[in-house]
Amino acid sequence: DAMVIQNPRYQVTQFGKPVTLSCSQTLNHNVMYWYQQKSSQAPKLLFHYYDKDFNNEADTPDNFQSRRPNTSFCFLDIRSPGLGDAAMYLCATSARGHRGDGYTFGSGTRLTVV
Amino acid sequence: AQTVTQSQPEMSVQEAETVTLSCTYDTSESDYYLFWYKQPPSRQMILVIRQEAYKQQNATENRFSVNFQKAAKSFSLKISDSQLGDAAMYFCAYRSAKNRIQGAQKLVFGQGTRLTINP
Image (cartoon, rainbow over all chains, first blue to last red; front, side):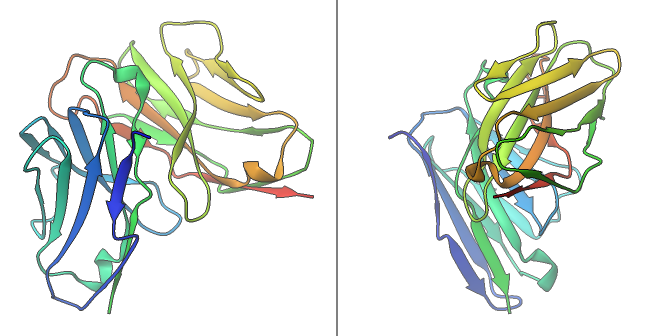
């Protein structure tokens, strides 16, 4: 089945040690999003790619970076994770021109910082 | 900027009964989409129902229906005949219908309502 896959489901990293989360999609969607969701809070958009066009949210810390080497894959890099970066990270996709379709979400990666 | 507010952090309902989750939003736009998403514990977020703002008719998907009041900027979700599998976090979300500009296609989420189903 076409889907959005996030790896790993659970990631433990050390304070200050760079970590990369991955997302892949078989939907051939143009847009890929990264959201941060802290416990019992609404998902917060970090950035998105519209094809190769990167769009950063104004309040996303510089500590967060993203790469999209091709249509199928998108990566979230946290350069120096702090305790406050512990959260669920959600990847989602949407197709260009289908604004009413909402998103397709992955299962998320839960990041723990120790 | 658009905002979405869910004023009920938690709700509970007896199995087989009906429950309504509230959502209000603020926007200056006239054309947009509204969504309810369900996020079960440790599982992915899935779309429950969507509403196009230009449609007056309320959307319905099986046991799920919405009460869309555009003038009041209200978008509530009614779940009929509640089932144990309905237990989840429910998020109301807004999406602009503008042509794509930076940020125009993003979903803006409310804080969520945790729904518990009592057997």
